[in-house]
Image: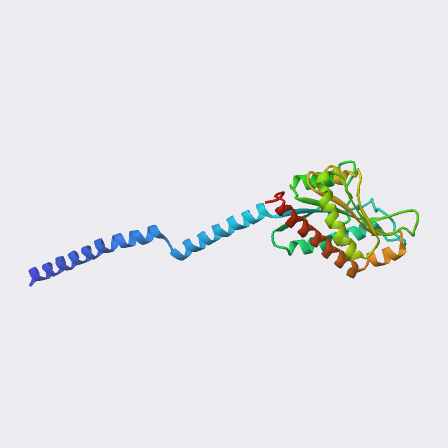
Length: 245
């Protein structure tokens, strides 16, 4: 009886050993392969990061420059309001709309009532550092004769001519002001930039009829839409011409 019990124990021991040896390779393979769901998640995250990085690198970069700011108020309008407030409000509307566009990346030279020295040439330098594809400086015009009115766009380099033309076309349609055309002028913000650049004078703040519209939300929304349309048209035309891939 004692002998039979020993044989039974030995038999059970051998069975346990055989099962363990059979299960060990399976457990080892499972440990090496890891969790398939986690692997899929990691692969998806890696793919998304790669896609986001690629989209960032291929985005059409737009630098928006709200003219003046801080202790530089710009023009004083017919009602006593400052140009710096108009340019910032309009620029923020442009920024918001561009951020909603696929394949667009927007940068602002200022986002609040801060002063940017003209002597430092920081506005064009900022756009150059960001490697922007286009640059727009937004302003409200002024003149000693309060009867002068209208919309005009300035550029400097030949490579900026087409961009200025397209912007002027769209913005004039939105403002419904007199079309004063585009003009070449040696202004540092359009001269020192390394990309197509335009300075947009939306209207004359010293003209009471122009100014009364320029400070309204409806007017600024229409102009912001027109600027975005101009940027998109220029981008499309440039791609056709092989300027941008």
